[in-house]
Image 1: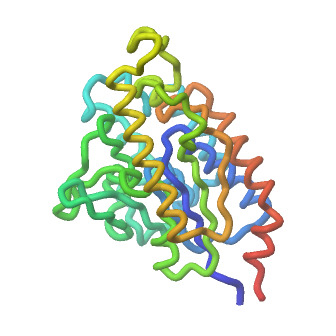
Image 2: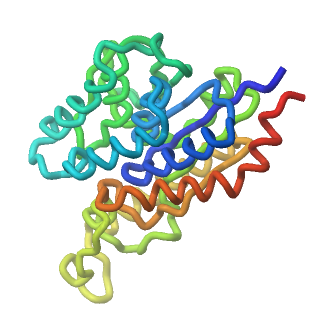
Length: 280
């Protein structure tokens, strides 16, 4: 009897397109997936795949959505942006529940009232995926099950612990959260999120960072510490880290490069993955 395999897909906005490349390689190599745990973009990709959309179709649909700037900041209202994403999700997930999935899924969110990590695995898909991908300041929180929920990445962008708690024997995680040391230390938050560089002198003088840059760096340090601590507490058997650090969370101008990065990273670890998922 082969081991139960969980695939954990992390959050990271446009960087999460790398998940599609990983799934493409898993399809080609016939790597079994018994459970998907997704956060934010990982939830969108994971649930779509578990509904039966092949990786190739997912790539085409994400490219089409990006060309219409569905995930961008072109809509002034956060609620308006969320409605645009919701309308696209409903095209594939309308009236579907977790019970309709071909692969069991768990999507991660956070309760914005008490800070509790929330695993969603029952009920209608669209509200759960919206909650998991409700990035603070970009989208409003989602009211669900009597809670006010936001992006699970606020606590843990690569939720390996829930995969183990759900009984996985082998956990493969895809981490697309940007490493702290790869980022310009005093980048402003707009540049970091949107994926373009505002000239340094516009927001600060030549020697000191601006207030916003300092606050953003402080947030990134805290988030990175939590991210690394959570991975150390529940290390996956295989950790894939596609080289997508250079993309902003809402930078969807190039969808193919992150997908290829995911493919390349999956192929690099394929032999180790195949050895783990074989029946003893």
